[in-house]
Image (cartoon, rainbow, N blue to C red; front, side):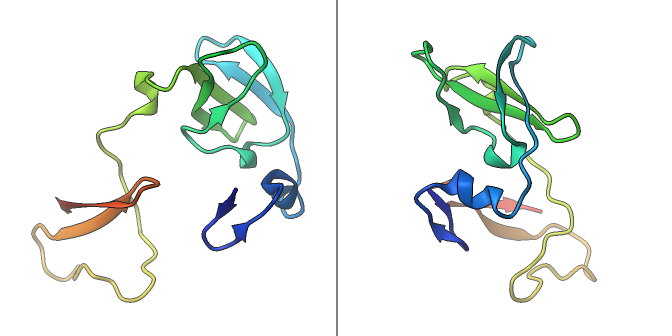
Length: 125
């Protein structure tokens, strides 16, 4: 496992723990049922599969609550909490130049790469 700008690591969780201090917290279902204790929210991303003994469908991260170190999971990969049809971006950090000229009002069409397979999607801004 790895992150594009870090590269592959044999044990990515141990690697992350070298830079972010582990802070244990609860792993709970969307109904609030305690399942286990985790070693830090920095080990999770939305949609990540969580393997727990005795669960054949798998749990998937539906919400991360850093203020309480709580990771909320749902059962199965087709739960509605795992899907979104919109999102909001505030103050993007452009790598090169700002492609949107903020001095001119109106809609702009941009191409965004969304998801792990990086299929480009055009939409109005």
